[in-house]
Amino acid sequence: MDFSIELWIQQYTQAVQRTFSGRIWLVGLQGSYGRGEATAQSDIDVVLVLDALSIADLRQYRTLLDTLPQRERVCGFVSGREELLSWEPSDLFQFCHDTTPIVGSLEDLLSQVHQADVLRAVHTGVCNLYHMCVHNLVHAQSLEVLQGLYKSAVFVLQAIAFLQTGIYARQKKDLHPLLRAPEQQVLQAALEIRVGKEFPPDAIQEYSGLLFHWAAGWIKRCSAGTWDS
Image (cartoon, rainbow, N blue to C red; front, side, top):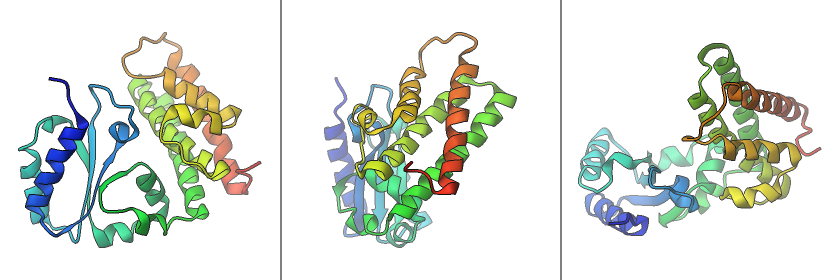
């Protein structure tokens, strides 16, 4: 039988409502299923935010998930309401825009995110990409690590596009026209370097070089305040 994310979410929502009746602030769907880009191997990224969260709640939640189909594919974010409302705003930017609400609303969270927070998300993102790209080139030389870095780079590209256009593109096909040429090149590389493809031995050097130089440039632009030039 083909997997239906709509049916699964319905089962999930009913299960959490039975277990945490009256305590649910938000249920949402993130990741590739939330963006409409899922494959048969995609994780099911679900969000559950309760009025408050305890270790006992986490034990109950784990037991609940064990009763659902596709358990091995389920991951996601669990939090208490006050913790999430107090979260670092630069992290909330991506969280809010990558979450499709099923129960509840994201308005209280989005109201806390401002342009400076989005810029900080970009700056932190490119710093992390630069660091891990260098580490991988010097030490691991891992194609798998590089693929993960390009996956992370897409989130940074989404934030850059939002900074420069005011539009958040959840799907890669909508993101490309919002980007300038250097960022379009990084997005194209992210689309090319997917898991499951065969690559020549020099692929790590080529794709790492592109990511390294692009991240280095953006680190300097963020610091100098020239991100929109």
